[in-house]
Amino acid sequence: MKLSKLKLMVAAAAAALAFAAAPEAEAAGKRPNFLVIVADDLGYSDLGAFGGEIATPNLDAIARRGVRLTGFHTAPTCSPTRSMLLTGADNHEVGLGTMAEALTPIQQGRPGYEGYLNDRAATVAELLGDAGYQTLMVGKWHLGLTEDRSPAARGFQKSFAMLQGLHNHYGENQNEAWAAIDEQSTYREGRALTTYPKGAYSSDYFADRMIGFLKQTQPDKPFFAYLTFTAPHWPLQAPAETVAKYKGRYDAGPEALRLERLARQKALGLVRADVQPHAPVDVPAWNQLTAAQRAVEARKMEIYAGMVDRLDQNVGRVIEALKETGQFENTIIIFLSDNGAEGGLRDAPGAHRAKGAATPEQLKAVGFDNSLENLGRATSYIGYGPGWAQAATAPSRLFKGFTTEGGIHTVAFVAGPGVVGGRVSDAFLHVTDVTPTVLEYAGVAHPDTRNGKPILPLEGRSWQPLLEGKVTEVRSATDIVGWELFFQRAVRQGDWKAVYLPPPGKRPYDARGGDEGRWELFNLKDDPAEAKDLAAVNPERLQALVAAWEAYAEKNGVVQRPAATVAQGR
Image (tube, rainbow, N blue to C red; front, side, top):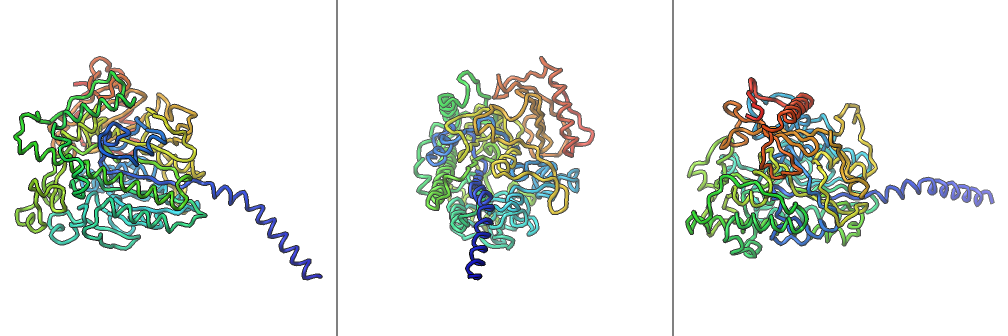
């Protein structure tokens, strides 16, 4: 009798504890999963949902189900963008004031220019892991090469990472011959160095690994998955059967493609019907090229399209895995490109690295072959150049590497639970907003300290009210957002933007020589193409924006050239 009574008391106590814990468990069960997908150098209009002709049905379906963010902005290049995406803080404060590959003597050793993600900010993975999330990462890291700067050291419980900014998409460049021209890529599985399976195509393999991680997750705990493809970053390489789908599609040249895409963007309501695009620069007329030159150029774009197509196919595989495991309906999907389309001329491995152009003997050692018949295969090495890039960034000005809209205005969309979809938002948004958005949806407050050390506050703004249809903007007309990279500058307040560029013809990452550029002024509401410089007619507005940029630079520790001469409207 006493034993039965004791059992009843224990059972009652257990029931009471279970009841008390139930609301917390229920809340935890309702916390959303997150899948953040980053494409590498994807053009603004490459996807069908953004005006492109490339077959991207999987991404298009997510974009149309969610909110297409036509006012989204990043840094001009990849690693600065990724540092802000993962921390919600400015890249100049968290270690990527410039790319590690582009550090100049006056920047080396300065705070915020470490060339890796420093410890001043917490990553979203660290904060979500602290809150009980499972954290997964597959793909390009580009935020540190050493074990203590790896994804595993920055909050990702499971990871397979390509550490540098680029690699051979078939894993060819993992030997001494590639190291000799400073083009060897390295990989980590968790904290340990590993190898990439030679012959596996990057988008296929990264999707495989992420699917494997997702299938290993505990169903009673939410996850944050960070899938960072290296497509369509150069070198342009893709499986032959995918490239073959686009044979002949681009024989009319980049200007014809630019006009096609711009017309579709207008028809989709992504661009105003009266917008006049910025004229392309450094693009020879198609009819001035020889037949052989046109064949090579068209082939480049066919391969590029194949890379985007294959990326989309693999996103579809990941989505199908989420559905098979019952996780899809509770997963918020954030998709973005890390910067504008790449317009640089890339024609050989090693040509743009610190060790300089490779010798013929070195190129032979790596099997380099840029013959027309071999383009797109593992031993070829090309980019698609400024013509195709500006077809992708239209109506905007220029492309990756510049602080103009073509370099920083990129494709993005969000879909999932809590998102009122089927919409297009032109709100001005920034990559620093991703972390605060994820944290708010997860119900995780951003702390002032972590592990007893102070961390930087968030610079970005949560998109939750925008995605839920409660507001149309997340920033006020007086808020300031600044950019700087390769000594180029930009600052935005409301619809107004000021841009500082080096002189025409000077490569954006060339930090040598004097500072001979000038500030320009644009009203992006009236002129999203940055085609009409208003500096001379509105000098007061320009002066105020330049002052705002100087304040931004001071606050974030931006290193400027000594004795720089910066003309306003000159």
